[in-house]
Image (cartoon, rainbow, N blue to C red; front, side, top):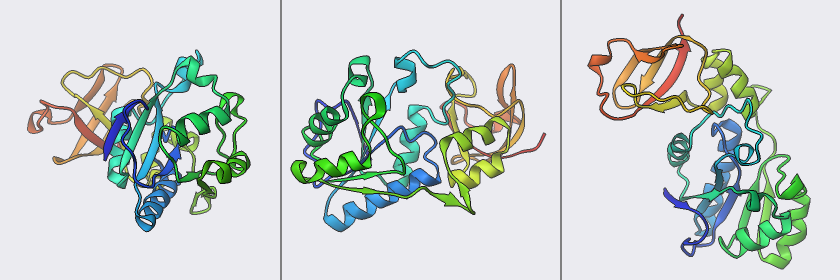
Length: 252
């Protein structure tokens, strides 16, 4: 996956199949959309493109109180790469950008800068200033602007609705097994254990002991406390670089 920061130096994407969103958690519902853009890109000889935003819009708009995110940008990049997306565009979110109307956003960014040919949106997707853009609005523009839009229905796993909000609640309660089922993989934390500096917006499970999987190094037990995070028998692991830690379950 190629990561592009901003819209100013984008390549000419080949028949791009695009989706836009925060994709916090890259959960099972997100994965249905991502799988669809990959399928359409392969079918049409194109490339799959995800557009996301940094910093999070609530931070820029002064509404960050209580904000907890499932992924840092680094973690989101890792998860999207695992899904097999061709390109990720990290759009800088600013106050000026937030004032764009839905039509300006579609015409100036999705059409002119990305060259969208197919746009895939999730259930109840809204965008633009005042969130006035939606699936019907996109349908009204598709013929004139030369793209096709399709909507993915709301996803359910075992009859349970999947959303980032639901997953956040489970993580905050320490229910890592249930969260893993909705995410489609263990909840991840990428961190330097030796010099851990907590991201104020990254959601961590409650204090306790957790069985975890460390990418490339096997299973371990991780302790979360008011003093930070620590691995049992830490000397047996390579701590010279950040570790990708997947939470499996809570054991105490």
